[in-house]
Length: 143
Image 1 (cartoon, rainbow, N blue to C red):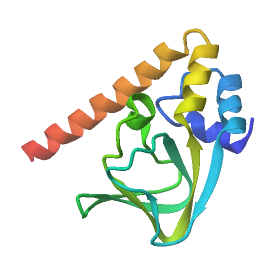
Image 2 (cartoon, one colour):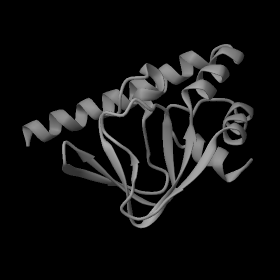
Image 3 (cartoon, helix red, strand yellow):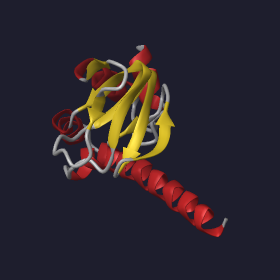
Image 4 (cartoon, helix red, strand yellow):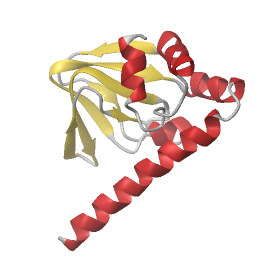
């Protein structure tokens, strides 16, 4: 199993997918190196797709405000991957730059259509991520 496939296994959207399907994603996805301080994606852009940080760090910025830092194994763009809507945040390469692995919407939907039952597993992963975000928001409000 490739290192990229192993990283995809840690993404809750893809954790329950069969190894062969993750390996196919790893083979058909793309890798991108972004220099320090350069945008990886920009809030409001129509580009879509999930990106996983495979090296370096990235800073998440929403409406000009820093929100958090992403490190190796973290990912973003899972919602735009599914709904195709504009980016909800700007992601900027950290001090050493970053490397990301991208799963495009075209690749994602091809794999879903080619593999019966994958859609259900992906929805389960997305639901888990949304529940986690809701719990974090509630905790922030309470305290």
